[in-house]
Image 1 (tube, rainbow, N blue to C red):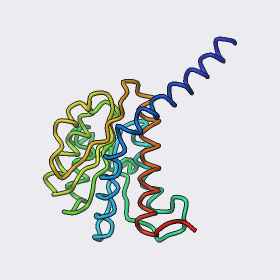
Image 2: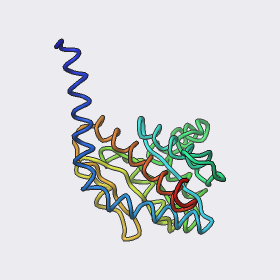
Image 3: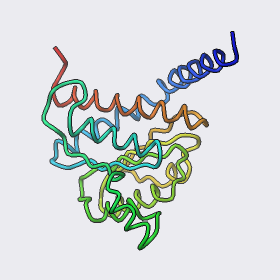
Amino acid sequence: MSDIDSRIENAFKASIETKQISINVLAESIELASAMLNKSLIGGHKILACGNGGSACDAQHFSAELLNRYERDRPGLPAIALTTDSATLTAIANDYDYRQIYSKQITALGQPGDLLLAISTSGQSPNIVEAIQAANESEMPVIALTGRDGGIIGQMLDENSIEIRVPSNVTARIQEVHILVIHILCELLDFQLLGPAE
């Protein structure tokens, strides 16, 4: 086996191993998070999502699955990815501080009962920390997707929020589990809203 083949195989095996470990570690948190999402949406509220880099893409992915559809046809669900408006992001970063690019949007758009999906593989992202603080001030529960030791975010969540912390220190493995968690949450939402698929 060549070095390239070995690297490919090792990446697959590492991803599979992280997911297998995550099953028992994360199942309860995922179930609780799906109940929080369902409660917020049934109550007529919306979901706001944010992250940086690959986690920004995950926030957009989640928002798209809610607004459009996951695997089953259903009415669109109200979700906003706070990562997509370049004029707003650059205005806030330029006029104030990059750490406030999400918190200022949450303060303006968030209402009590809305929910924030905050994604940070390290749990340390300053703008995600400030986003969670803004959500708390707006009486919005938070679902935080993290990794490693949970960082600052793992320590700051209140009793109305939940952390889904991937048991890995490798950014790529954490992100791979995050997207799986997002897909599971979408599947559970469809099940809760529509019942079992025929």
